[in-house]
Length: 132
Ligand SMILES: [Zn+2]
Image (cartoon, rainbow, N blue to C red; front, side):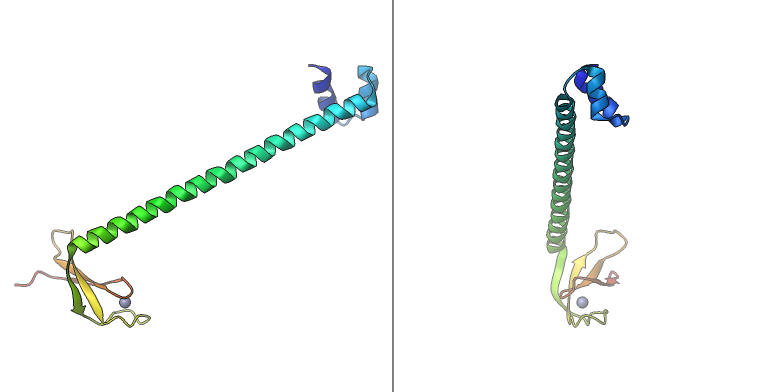
């Protein structure tokens, strides 16, 4: 352990600068300087770690956002490709929506034929059975 490390350790153990300076046989300003340097160094490290965390969160957030975007986009593509009829007259089943038109989307389930989705709010309306 060098004098600098000794100073920090003893200071953290509760010794006074005066005592440490006497033990090390150096000037009190010397030990104070060492200690302050150490505090600054730690502060800098903490700041860097904090920035790193903020940056990581921001990257994670961005990735999540891109995934959501991709998912929404893929759904839109899928829906568009599978929409058989864009103008089925149907009153939206939800009270908070005035939709009068639904689109008929072919199902990706084998046992189901298609479903209606409100063109205004985009919510599922009902499943349609195979006709005939
Ligand atoms: Zn609706």
